[in-house]
Each structure stands twice: as structure tokens, then as C-alpha cells.
Amino acid sequence: MNVARAVGAVLASLGVDAAFGVVGSGNFHVTNALIEHGVRFVAARHEGGAATMADAYARTSGRVAVLTVHQGPGLTNAMTGVTEAAKSRTPLIVLAGEATAPHSNFFVDQAALATAVGAVPMRVTSAETAVAQAAEAFRVARDERCTVLLNLPLEVQGQAVPAWRGPHVEGGGPSEDSRSANSPGAGREPRTCPRGGEPRAEDAARLAEVLAAARRPVFVAGRGARAARRELERLAGLTGALLATSAVAKGLFRGSPWDLDVSGGFASPLTAGLIRDADVIVGWGCALNMWTMRHGTLVGQDARVVQVDLDPGALGLHRPVHLGVTGDVVLTARAVAGLLAEAAPDDRAGYRSEELAARIAGENRWRDVPYADEGGDGRIDPRTLTIALDGLLPAERVVSTDSGNFMGYPAMFLDVPDERGFCFTQAFQSVGLGLATAIGAALAQPHRLPVAALGDGGALMGVAELETVVRLGLPMLIVVYDDEGYGAEVHHFGPDGHPLGTVTFPPVDFAEIARGFGCEAVTVRDREDLAAVAGWLAGARERPMLVHARVSGARASWWLEEAFRGH
Image 1 (cartoon, helix red, strand yellow):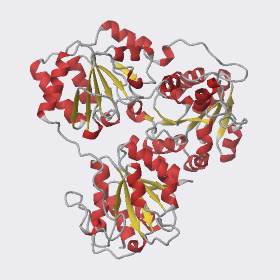
Image 2 (tube, rainbow, N blue to C red):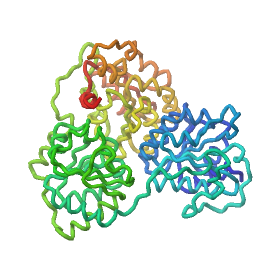
Image 3 (cartoon, rainbow, N blue to C red):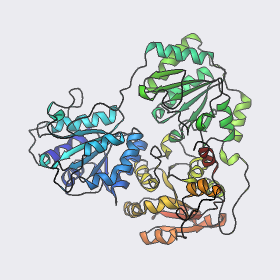
Image 4 (cartoon, one colour):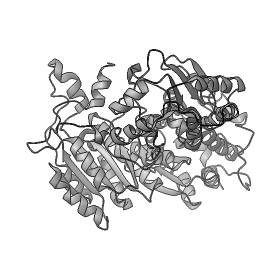
């Protein structure tokens, strides 16, 4: 067995079950090894799409995913998706062929690329160390919640590996050989991802004291809390806290009578008011950044802010906190609940009341907020469109949203069953990731209807992956919110009289493009046009369907108006 085959075998044996990529000469053998050992390989049409598919698969499956790319341009093509994954602390392994000779056309300092975007660079340096280094890359991705670039030098891949009987994950990190400074970027760079665990006892006690004294506590759970629903709900019951999430954790508390849904720019008026009136706000695995806290306007003047995070460097990064706790969310919530249960075993009312529960049930969804329909002249109001779609779609769905002026509508008007029913690749705020996100999420959640929500700009950026959707036979609903421009820029610069020719475009027939790829398609200008969607949903869904929604765009969406206040 050579190095390339050994790396694929190790990762498969450790539990990797899906890999995404575009195959070239530099990653041909390791990709075939993954397939040979039972890993499903999904060929994308562009490395950028493959990276985002792998990111979304890992997020919505809870498992380590693999991206496999050619050396040099294969990796640079993937870097936007890799950056999104790294910023989101997605457990992802990027297998990249590597040209180490500076005179090679393919040469680029791949370790430096990884470091620049926050990924962890590693390298397989010899046949003798290949198995241990591949196993260590998996451990770092899984246990430290990191995106890892594992470079596979071309001159090393073909070397024969000594007999190997199985991986050894625990202990013994990279060998001294892998850290050698004799070749650029060798081995691991200094640790960039945090280790998590039990909070310090004194920190847990201080947080228990803060919550015991709170009269109107609110929990805001982020991506780091997506596995902690049970523990957070128990602690919230002991303190009378209301439950909210950041956008990426939408759906985490679905079904709870105290679920406020998403905090921040997407928050409904009721949610925003309740968070603003809180006397204690606890961010659980949540950055509490300008988006989640509406540039700080959701933090009351006298509110105490607490942040719990694996990474001590994240505490207080975006806003001052009264208490920062380093620790795993599950373990921290469990420790604090134990302290409070000993002191006061009965649930406290806190922020909760029967009256408030009724208000949350009747007012908190955006579809319950009155609005004046702005459709007409052959265009549909995006709110009307999305509310109608929400009523048509089955409850078991996984919604993936691209970036742009439109994105608040599917994010907030489409309900999802739980936190794995919503995939929101927005850590890098890149337009064009939505369709690839939906593919990865669809493969991770095959029992759910996949829904891709795209703007016209993002749809055209990622259009190559429509072929992937059709080839894989995914029963996907793809909704293009088409206002014929980059709406955020139109609404940002237009009111000041700036020329908009650089950000507005002639009409594009997305339905006809979709049919050319093999999709069913319909153009929607009013509610009645959605009958075709109802018919597709009721049928066999043998082909994906694209909805080309010609949406009204007279003004910025509510969340964008909020965002502009911080510019």
C-alpha cells in the first residue's frame, strides 16, 4: 500500500463516510482509495462548490467530511469554501496534492494559504509517518472542531507504507519528521483551534450566581451549542430563561413554548423587544457579534452579558462581557444546572408567564407580523412568496440559504424542524455558496426535502452545480429570488444617488436555464403561479424543480436596513 492509498484507508476506517471534490492527477489515487474503502465520493463541477458541499455535509450530519482537490489551482479554486468552513469551525479535512518544487507551475505555499484563512495546515511527510499523520488530521478536525488542510506531496504519495493493521488515533501527535523545517510549511503550524472541556469550578459557580439573581434571563445559543438542546433547556427551566439562537443555530429549540427563534437582524419585533428587556443575556457557543446583537442595540443598558465558548480568545471579542466562561457548552450547562438544582430544585418563573407564552405562540413568527403586500406589475412580494411556499412544503425539510438582500425571507419565513434543518453558510458572507450548500445538506439529510434559496447573483455564480443536482437525482426545490441585481448594493448606494449600472443587470430566464440542465421549472409572478410547485410536491419528484421568482425589490429587506445602520 502506498501513501495515497493509506491516507484514504485510514480516514475511511476512522468513520469518514462522504468526500467531495474535483479529481486531478494529484488527488486521483487518494480519492480512489477513499471510494475503495466505502466512502461515498461526490464529484462537483468546481472545487469551490465541492468545498461548500463538504462544509454543509459536516454541519448537518455532525460527522467529519472530506474535500479532495488537485494541487495548486485545485486548492485555490476551493479557498472561498474552505474559508467559510474554517471561520465556522467545521470539522473538515481537505486532502490536497502538493507540488513542493518552487519551479513547478502548480507550486503555491499551500500551508500559508491554510493559515491565512484560519484552517490548520498539516502535511504527510513520509511513508513511515503517513498513517499517524492522517489519523492526527482526523483527530484534530473531529475533537478540536477545525478545518484541516492535509497536504499530500506528490513525491511522497507513491512511497510504499510499512504494514499497517489499523489506525491509532489517541495520543502521539505528529512526529518530529512532520515538524521538520527543512521543507516549507511542513507538519502542523502552532495550534489555532481550541480544546474544550469542563469549565473551571469557580466560573461555573459565578455563572450560577448570575442566573440565580436574574429576573429576565435570555439564552442565545450559537453554532457551538447545536448539540446542547437538552442541557440548555434544563438550565433554562431552572432559571426561567427564554431561548433564542443565532442564525446558524436556527431551529435548535423548535417546539419549546419559550423559543424566540433567531436573535439579531432576523429577529421578529417581539423577539427583539424581549431580548432588549433582558437583565441577563448568556451567549452559549455564540459570538454575540453585530449581527446577533443588532450592533449592540439588543443589549439593554443594565443587562449583564455572559459568554460561554470553547475558545478563550472568543470571549469578549465582539462586545464587553461581565463574565466569560471557557468550556464546552454541554458540560458547562450541566455543571451550572447541578449547582442551581442543589440550591433551588424547583423551576423558577424568571421571564416566563402564561401571558408571555401566549404572545410567543401568536406573535413571534414573522408570518404573524402584518405587512403591506408590495407585489404587482408582474412581480411577487418576497414575503408573500415565502409564506406561500412555507404552507406548501412538507415539515421535514432542510433549508439552505445563499447570501444577499433576499436572504432574510427564506431564513425567517420558512420554518425548519430542528437545528439540522437549516444550513446557513454566512461566516465569510460570500455570495454564491447557496446551491452547493443545499447539495451537501441534502446528502446529509436524505429523509428531508432539500430547499435551496438563492438570489439571482448567487444562482449564476453557482450555476454549474445544477448539473450536480440533476446527476445525483436530488429531489431539490431551488428558489431564485430574482430582483435583477445585487440588491444589497442597490439599496445601500441607490438612495444617495450613486449610479447603479455596475450592480443591476438585464433579465435572465432562470427557468429556461434550469430546463437546459434537466430540471423542471416555473416562473412565478404571483401566488397562482405556485400551483406548479404544489403539483411537483404531490408527484414523484423525479427531477429537481427550480422556481424563478420575479420578486419586487422596491426597498431593502428589514434585516438589511438594520445592517446598514452599522456601516
